[in-house]
Length: 233
Image (cartoon, rainbow, N blue to C red):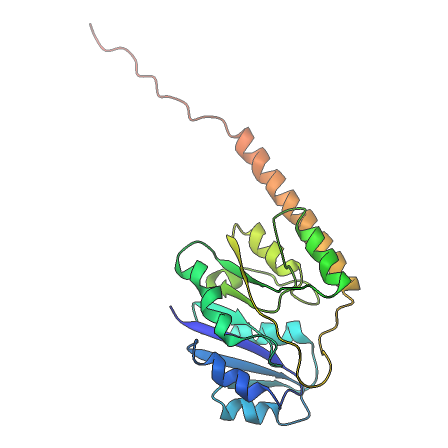
């Protein structure tokens, strides 16, 4: 089973090379999507062994992920950050439920969910399926499933797991360790005002699909038995 790691990066020259080198110990390829960096992020990632693609300007982490997803050649795609907060040593733990045939999507559950908006999104998702961390940046997902997902929203928070669930995916969770950021400030916005509406939309669409499916099953009449005319006595 081939494994691709997709890493969005914005001005992460101090950490990206180390992240790439460690990730390559557990993956067949590492794709770094440079989201409009003004430093040496792309150069250092390439030197460390990554396939690098650059956005000409900052387009956001989800657009970076989508760019990486299109380039990924693995049977399974892993997502993680370039800032060193995610530990590549957790990759085998994320892959294990998929390799064992128990899951199609594996969420890396953080020890603490620090932002209220992330906790609120988790609560919304949990109305439909058990979910400990709907906004994690470290996941493993089958490429065949990813290709069928619309990937709506401003970020993966909440919508990614709901889209997978709506397609019948088996979702598993494993704990991961998230380290403090060593350099600079967190670059991913966590206000999630618009994202909440995308999550609500996905909840509605998923419930609607399931209701239609139930009606279809209940309305299906049992197959009729063929009655043969009696033969000559």
